[in-house]
Length: 278
Ligand code: C2E
Ligand code: MG
Ligand code: MG
Ligand code: MG
Image (cartoon, rainbow, N blue to C red; front, side, top):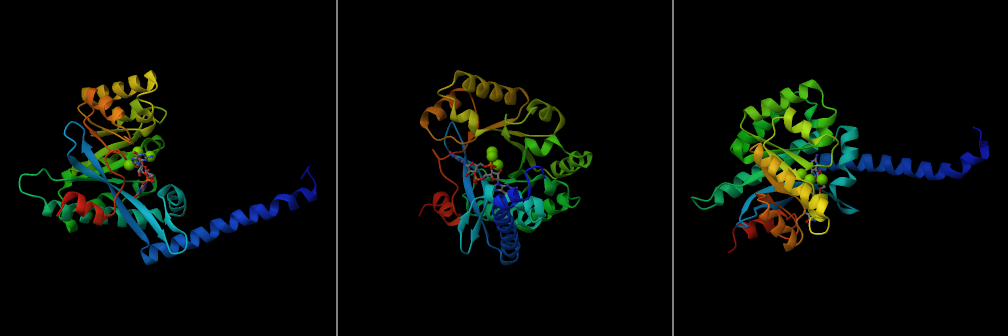
């Protein structure tokens, strides 16, 4: 008000434009849900000592008819805000279980079954029917519960409601394992390890990035791995891009890892070729 009436004219068009963009994106997203415009990519999670593939992380993409492939960071926040993450996340979970079961059925006898990791958003955890959804995704795909990992971020655990913990316990009771994603980036990571029934720690890429350059990053990474061992949790290092990072992590006894050094997130077809070379 103090700036006077004219000031509004200056930024109003910009505001209107961004508001319209937001509305357009929301309408597009609604249509995307109805028309199934989503796809999954699968990134291998590798046993660092042997470099064998132990599992896959399912990562969603939006194939927009005009704008092409939209990465999750550009639509997940809007999907969460509008509640559309619920149908999207349900599709992701069912599709990830279906693909993993299909790959496991094709694997040779004696090979350990692959795990599949699915990212969950806080909005999905607010739903009382989440445990039923997980159990129905397992039942309809035939994927054993021990092959499914649910990834939760620390921010999800920060402002959790009391029911969240019950829901996570119900999911764990099915035999599904829980991972803390982006570990080390939240404000009280250690508290989550005490309060939540987690099985796996995923060390955030930012630690792995600096492992060869910053002694502090290396010390923190090794500390997280040791913490995991002391608590009998698996540790997965995220975002491994160079062999130097791999050797530091292997020397530090990190069990698993993923990153462009091994493979980028792949289409289901490319994953077929990787798993079953002809
Ligand atoms: P995230 O769960 O931490 O997934 C790891 C992200 O790091 C992925 O990005 C992956 O492509 C990327 N990445 C893996 N290795 C490397 C590497 O070596 N270098 C670099 N620079 N990046 C690497 P993406 O696929 O864009 O996903 C971003 C985030 O979006 C995910 O982070 C996750 O939080 C969220 N997300 C993805 N799919 C879903 C989903 O189905 N549901 C929900 N709720 N969130 C999802
Ligand atoms: Mg993840
Ligand atoms: Mg992560
Ligand atoms: Mg992340």
